[in-house]
Image (cartoon, rainbow, N blue to C red):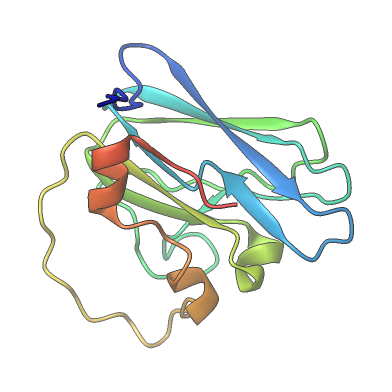
Length: 157
């Protein structure tokens, strides 16, 4: 029987996430789509798609009036547009689940999820109807939290 150790970042490792896309623009994605990190770790996104610019944007009411999908006391972020080869980094210190997306490609399902530490269960709350809802393709693109915790890294290509 083969045993594969859990892929999980530790210590001061910088975790790299790449942005990719098909040459014809028909499919765009973050790789990996789900990661498990410890509080205080840095995540760096790099645009490896030669044909598109992308963003890394947290779901937060302060950023484009989007529903809150990061811990309530965490700082939201928006990378602005990253051209091919450019990078953006965030250090995550608050335990919890962080969902993010690419502004121009959210409707193509370009979303990702980061689990920081061991998140506490959160009771579902009503979403403010004045906020822009998530499209179904984005909602279906998030890897499950338990899968991210079990595997450490989840790839969806």
